[in-house]
Length: 114
Image (tube, rainbow, N blue to C red; front, side, top):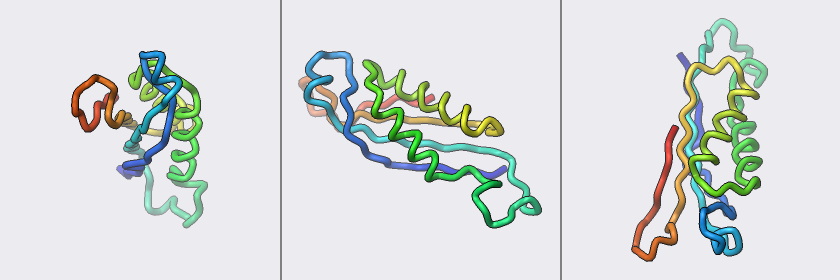
């Protein structure tokens, strides 16, 4: 079993349930872990045989650019996009963290993982 991922990709987005969040925006951090079958004998030192984390980063940017009210929606949308692009994955874990959520309290981040 092989594993590839991106951890800590920080992007600005306009996601959130409250109207002001769609105007002011905020910082979001994306973590993605993907497990899949990769046999050493099939590896030819080219991106055609592996899950390219550059493509994962592009998918994160794409999903982040589409406004959602809930971080749960962001996480499931990203997971779906990854599965479409790489249908041979065995397991995908996505975590979306919202830095300093506007709750009137000193909270470092909130997150959803699926």
